[in-house]
Length: 86
Image (cartoon, rainbow, N blue to C red; front, side, top):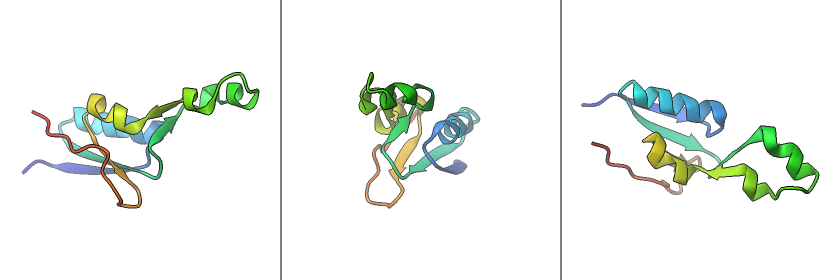
């Protein structure tokens, strides 16, 4: 039986923690209250109207296969991915 980890929060730290735990051999589930990772250093350009909000966000469901983690909605309504990793 594989060891599993649960990471709460899909921000920079939560995603990085999930990636590092996965690299160490654990099966990882990341729980987030939003379906995107907001790239805070670029937020100044949103405030000035130079860049739309959607262009400074990355979809967690799109990142999950690369990170090899399962991403779940914090309210338990859906799993954005159901990976089967080799």
